[in-house]
Image (cartoon, rainbow, N blue to C red):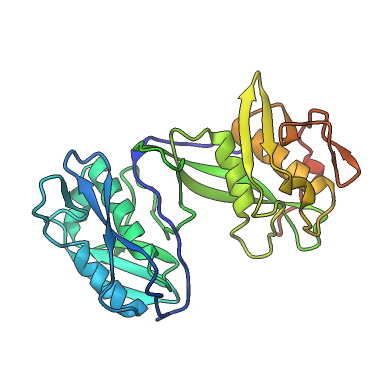
Length: 307
């Protein structure tokens, strides 16, 4: 079992709106500008209408907006005055932003807020699927020395409607499936998540989102709704809507079950998992798997990684 590490940080959630390079933006689309509140404890969102509606034009405009001076006393520019956005490059849907050396001098809280707001600013632009940070041309790292890498909409997980600024970072071992749907494939996923979201719920959310790696395939329908996830006395309880029973993914019947079970066992150290549908366990999955039981992990289903 992989050893996981986590730490509290202050950050917001980035929403990914992907598209094609220089894709035209629909006039009805809503975009946002991001600022830091006066107390420097969270992010302030303002509606934004782009002057032009092409990817490159919006990137240039947003690069100016993240540095704009603010006169309102209730919030501040997302990027402090001391830091300059020196230049940027946009290639293969990835935007790389280069900051002056002063960026590395920001406090942990201020840096996280700036990072979150800037990523949120650019990732909403159609055609931009990831954002990378450089400092004086060198890849940026967080205050613990961990490389930031490419950040996108899957980097951040938040409980909708909750205004809480404490977040955690963790690396999850999630189990998806192979091309033929008869084996599990393990994939490591790095994720930031709100401290008010239980880790066990984050695990199931990420399984529903599906895999990131090529050659790895989903085990749960993206339409699956989580009705509840909890842990009690070392047992994980997962309550899903009827979509779980109705899904038509071409996978063997045991794969979705143990995708959930193995992932929760690895991440949350539970001993067993019970799965219910609309609160009921007296259900049969794929007419062959009785849900009215506690499932233990089964690593015999896991496909060995290629050398």
